[in-house]
Length: 238
Image (cartoon, rainbow, N blue to C red; front, side):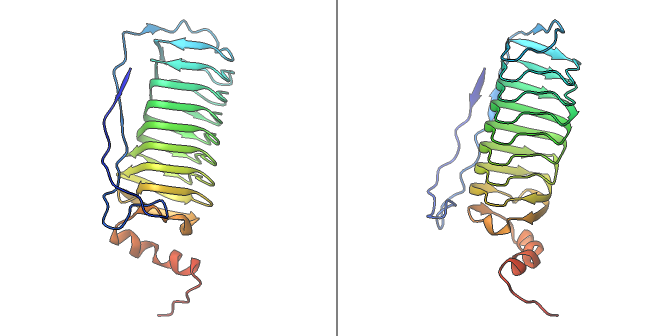
């Protein structure tokens, strides 16, 4: 099971970000304590299946349908997820280590008290999903679709995100730590207590006007100056 550390305190301003002089509220991280796990028997995933206290090790579930399934107190290690359908699945108190695959469908799923470590994923569909107390550590994820998702107490740490789509998403207490954020789309997103200072590079392709509620560094501000000027209609001439 997961234990959660307490975050810091601090009021919010009217725009959803930290109030003047208030401390940014950090994300609360999951602290997983998995029980002794039973090895998974290798059977094909079942829609609405119930998986409790299992270890999926080097299991290839490419193309299988686990829509609506529940994974609780599980460890998935080295699993192949190419085209796996996990629509509306629930991952609770679970660790995914070195998952790999393209086109994994996790739309409208729930991830709560979850660690994702050293992922190698592309085109993951997480639109409409709910992520709460989640750490994504290491690895690379291309074209991560988080449109209209709700992220609360989420940390992206030491990973590379290429063209992630946060369009219309709600981000509350989200941190980017030693993380590369390339070509992010923040169109219509809502940010509250979002710490972007550890993102290097920080590249916002669209939605730079939605950065209210986030904290960036002075260096990042200078890097974003051309995009911010263009958004504000400012003409800059040397």
